[in-house]
Amino acid sequence: MLQVGEEIKVVSASAPTSEYGIAVARVSFRKGTFTSGVATHHMIGIGCSLPTSVEHMIDGKRLRHHITPGSLCLCPVQARHSTAFGGSMSGIVLRISPECLALATSDLLGHNAGLIEQLNGRDGFIAHVAHVLKAEAAAGHPNGTLFWNAATDALLAHLVRQHLDQSPPPNCEQLDLNSINRLDSFIRANLDETLSLDSLAEIVSCGRFQFARLFQSTMGISPYKYVIRRRLETARAMIQARKVSLAEISAATGFSDQSHMTKWIKRVYGATPTQLAG
Image (cartoon, rainbow, N blue to C red):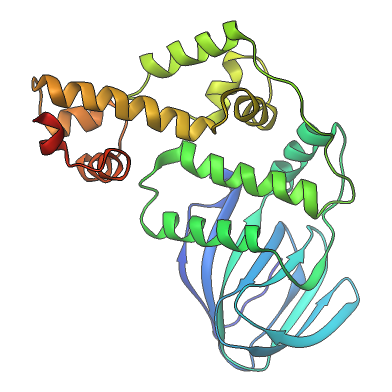
């Protein structure tokens, strides 16, 4: 269990790890802060501030170095760890449930494999996803469960490929036409609902990680982007029909609110809803 003192401040945090499998928090540490314990989750730390001297220890391995923006630390579950901060710093911490990573590993590798500890490294993809999740959590999850699942599943797949002791086999499978049609019909019929990777994967009877991989391989885009495309197509048709309000359209097409829908319409179509209406 991570032990924290008064010098550690959680600036912002997402929902608990149990709800999504991965939780994110933006934290700050004062000079002289010391943390120690046994990790109850897989932990990923990303440095965000000016260079700061620290001393890390994970399962007996020690390293004194300077954390810089983008510095990466990976601490596997059950690892005994400690960190002493020689200066103030801020960063992003990702907590990944053991069950969540085990599911991704089993789905992608067909067996279990352990996360490799890393005291100091760099991984641009992990840093990018961490910042995306931090921004999404700070904004109150405006893009919904499917966006969070897509981002966290991409992170998990990357961890399996790059930071476990084995890599998944190359993917050459694809969804058949019947599966694609059933998925598309389900998505169109439930645009006003919260669609998750689990609910979509259930339609074609496979795990969520396998489903995301198969869908991307077959359609050339992620399930999240495909659902957004269908939401936008329906919203555009309803706007041009001029029968209901924009608020009703955003609710009917699954956007969190009218502002969220407008943002996506401007991003994709380069016009406001009023301009689309003509």
